[in-house]
Length: 588
Picture 1 (tube, helix red, strand yellow):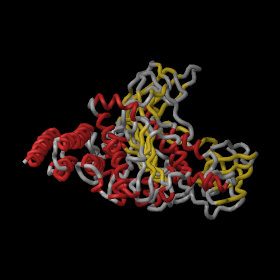
Picture 2 (cartoon, one colour):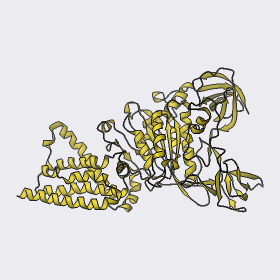
Picture 3 (cartoon, one colour):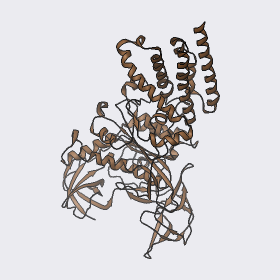
Picture 4 (tube, helix red, strand yellow):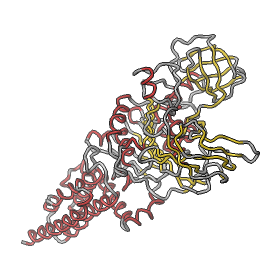
């Protein structure tokens, strides 16, 4: 192992000399306190190291030792339900050893070594296996069956395999390789975080990730294996939107990375998730969740690692054939960590001081998402959907991180502080947001309901027409509008208030099934179409605007799933009756 000594300390950056035997991205132990660091630049025998712990008190001449391996994560049973920091140290285990404060240089294994897991083999001695094949399973939680995979790069014949209870580092099988050598297989494997895990084939995104959030599912859908960004100013609801997606998205596994956000937000997640009952399984949400807590008061360099740690764990579950949703909150804090390290390395700054390679680093992260055929002979399909929050200073999305992200992602949910101040949540602006997956998902939605895309298009037109008419209203007032334009304004208001507005903290409204979303769209459009016909037949616009059925349409969102069809028919009947009465009154 290469040993050197510190020659300079600049915040999280440590420069060491005598490191000729080390390689780029090697993990190193810095000083006698054995702080964890990673080599990010080499010049001859001099290495620049980003240290993932507080460097106060380090001095020149202290030893630096390379481990000879890149920054890697441990992948195996025990990931689900665990809270890690940015470099995959389990925070609960550290707390049990040292109390409530993180001590520098503490070394604990990422996966608990004392816990035994029951391993059930799915192959037998004499079977030939290749990389990515499943050799057995471990029931990790009541919800997640952990599939034990042959590590990448290994293939051969199983010579010995046994069922029983094992810790993650005990041998469960022996593999005889083509060259005659034998390799032990354990429940755990390691993977370098900066390298994407390989797969057999990437598939096109053809089915949506259902979230139960109406503005997302109906207007701006994300595909399974897709990438989305949620930019928005302070207080506009980025974190709550990501919490909602983590809770309700149609994914088998959720990986939530609190990257540089405030500690109290992460505390909310930690307190809330164990108590939440997952609607898909009926068990606690933590039974399918991995949390990575790397808050704003933790060392800045570890933010960069946390993003890679999270997506590597997500890829591992994707390779088992699961649908994984990854939430990164927020990539802006990660970019700020890149900017700080770049400045300390004295690199030429790009726009607003961010490094020139900001765009390519963001692309490397988002490109690891996708719907794939995993390695292995069974051709299983997995998906990794990545949703990153962006926190532009002052809500200005012309800044570099937002712009670099928008060039990469295909879904833009633009949060608007004006909507948030009006208490319209989710505060996703329907005029600025977009989804490039809409066309590729159209056939899937139309198979659910043949008129889905038509209803969606009509709602978008109403909202756009409303925006154009609002300019006139501001100038000359509502009275200047024709009756038909006034009806457009009212129908668009119904779209906004009765459909798009959704209460995250209401027991029923927090999640809406596609069937109910479809009925809600039909009711809003039915009101507009039938009121328009009645208007042409001579009814008074004031009467049509003030129909009591509009209250019923507005309250339909609080209808429980098992009562949707009955309530839908009742409201349609009420609508026809009231419109008929309005026409009779006019004739009278």
